[in-house]
Structure formats: structure tokens, C-alpha cells
Length: 294
Image 1 (cartoon, helix red, strand yellow):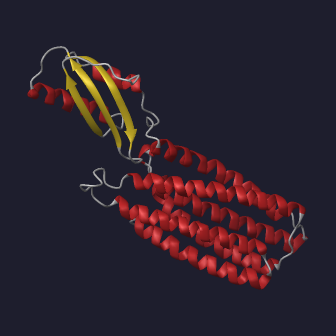
Image 2 (cartoon, rainbow, N blue to C red; image 1 turned 45 degrees about the vertical axis):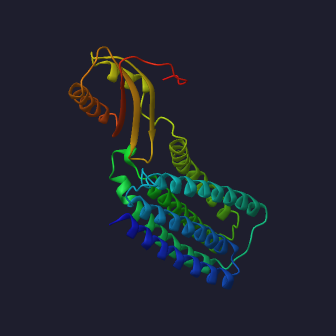
Image 3 (cartoon, rainbow, N blue to C red; image 1 turned 90 degrees about the horizontal axis):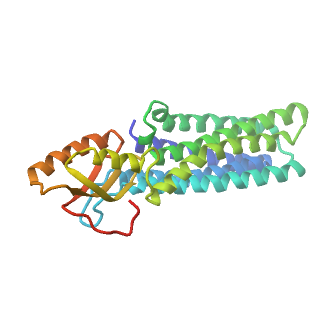
């Protein structure tokens, strides 16, 4: 299934959850369900952002956007992850407050509505996360879809916590169980979200992608006997799938265009094994001083 269609289905299902949780939350005087509805609504907004990013990812480069809209995936992934981290923090704070000030609710409505929300969120998370579990190349992971998947996973976990808390309250009258479960799930989601937030941030900062060693890249380039030196190396990523390299290489002797073309093809082949799929090389007969370490 296309990512855009997956996101559209997830958006619709989550809007259904939001409406139902607000109605039943007000009817049952349940702040837990209303809070969960607010959290779900925030995730609906994030899913809409992810959907817009998925649409932009299909747009081709033009005269103004020469790289196309590849960066939209990372920007959406960063925004989604950042919002999720904020939501998790607020949930933890609210849960701690409820440990000291338990809220009595109609547990039957909490159990039923929490169960429905859990099923829908778990299905939506599975829908978006299915491709991830079958993708063994994590460097090609779609950060946009991954962030949306984590949003839905957080909702499923929180809904499950609501159900478990409702069951305990119904059978034993122990009100502090619900916030404890919410805290535990929130800590798990925090751990899962941090790598996505960090990876998308580093891509936006145009840092060297994880797993790529600049010194090793230099050794690969200098392994060609025709090349005397290499400098002004830059390696960055526009998205989770597109890694770029630019460099100046100094030839030992004058090289004609045919020889340079041969060396360039060999370099592209060798560097593609490291995940670098866009290469720009500037040939020189002699080097020049630059302000960069590499």
C-alpha cells in the first residue's frame, strides 16, 4: 500500500477516535479519556503534516527547487518527533500529578473506549510500521513514516494503559495504577523517539551521515594512482535515502576528459557501496588552500 494511502487511512481512523473519546469522556466525566483525545488530536495534526510531506516527496525538481522536496521527509520527521517528545513529557507530568490526586471515573466507559482506541491505534501503527520491520537497510528508513508510526504506537500504548487502569479500578478500586502504566509507556516511547529526533536533526544540520568515515572516503579516493591529493570533502544527506558527496581531487599529471570520466565512474561505483549515491568531483592539477579541515 502506498505511504500516502496508509497515512490517509490512519488520519481518518484517528479522527474517529478523537470524536468518540471526547463524547464518552464528557459523558463518563473521564479526564483520562479527554486527555487521550487531546493527545490523539495532536497526532492527527502530525499525521496530516506527514501526509503533506509524503505528497511533496513525489514532486520533481524545478528551477527554484533544484533538489526537489527531498528535505520535506526529514523536516516532517523532526517536527513530528519533537512534538511527540513534548507530548510524552506532558503525559508524564500529568501522570505524576494524578498519583497524588486520583480522578474517579466511570471505569466501564474507560475500558470499552480505551479498548476501541487501542485496537484502532495498534492497527494504524501496524499499517505504517509493517514496511519498516521488513526493511533490513535502516539507512534507507523513511523518517517521516517512522515518526508517524511512533505517534500511533504511543497512542496504542497509552490506550492500553487506560484499559489496564480501568480494569484495576473496576475490580480493585486502585486509582494510582493508571498513571503508573502511563509513565512506563511514556518512558518507552521516549526511548524509541529519541533516535529518530536525533537522526533527523543531524540531517537538517547537514552532518556526515552515521556509518560514513571521512578518512575511509579519502583512502578510497587516494587509492587511485592518478590522484595525488583530495581536499574540501563534504558529505551530507538530503533525506534518509539520498547521500551526497562533493570533493576536489588533485591529479598528479594532466588528465584528459576521457581518463577523468573513467576515474569518476570507478569512484561512483566504489562510493556507492558506502551508501553515497550523488557525487560531485572537481578536478585540479594543483591544490589550493581552503578553510576546511577536509
